[in-house]
Length: 388
Image 1 (cartoon, one colour):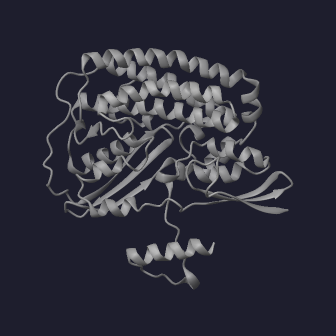
Image 2: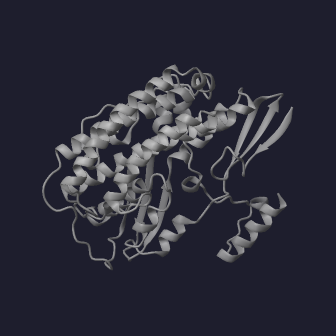
Image 3: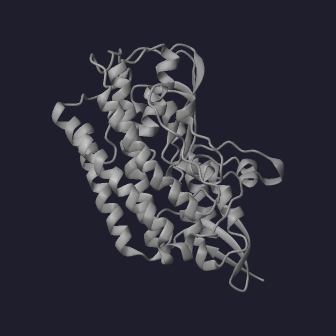
């Protein structure tokens, strides 16, 4: 038996993460995940900034689901303050989330194809994703952190011209989703690398509390959108569920969800209410004292925010649980019994985002706790990682 470290810097991982693997020959017998390489102190930063300022920080947490973070935070603040969003703004907010889901799923499919070595499909998915990003740029002004959401609704309205472009994009994605579904189900190269690989049974998925497409690929019909928030109260759609629980099933769930998102978007623009897109908010007002939670279905799964206010202009506590944090232990579990060469494919199978998942690693020697200043913590971290 041998022990092999994979990461934190590895060609297969787009962000730093470390797997400690135990091998028997080429087979993985045990795996341990080690995080903490990209911790940025976002939650602490949120307590130093005003509740108005953090709206722009929240969307920087993740470059792929920036609007999900911003919307989840804003939704929580609205509950704390009692702000009632404008209905038209809520519809535009929901449309933004579904466009983001499209671009996230297409990006992930491309990354998976790249890990497998099917570069042509990687180019196809990212070419299609460009068309989604073009619309997001027109909606918010930027292609990644588009700042399309604000307190009480949306930041920018939809023009008639943009609505027609969104409809054409939705029709295009409906067509392309069928193409990707057919490829996932029938391409021999793709099936050889994904069918039966990284299988997570339904009972295991429930025990590990996985979320999003990872859970739905294992037969668990869980989707926060179905609990009813934003325009999902009214938008008709069905939760996509597969039963096999392997990487292939995860790919199929995401390909089918492209179709679901396209149909939701078409329904939104057809039923878009008239009126204002947001409400005016006093920028330097204090938050009411209290606490609340907010949940949205980000592209990777349930995104959870806990907000606590002590009645000042700053939030006393912000706690964020991202989908990758919920799903990362499933990777360590499903790696067992597979070839070392399958590790990048299985790790990519949950669509991980290390930057928004990462947490600081704390070490207590002999049960003693020590409070450090920011400078002491930085120095300690540098010396600790230098050791090994």
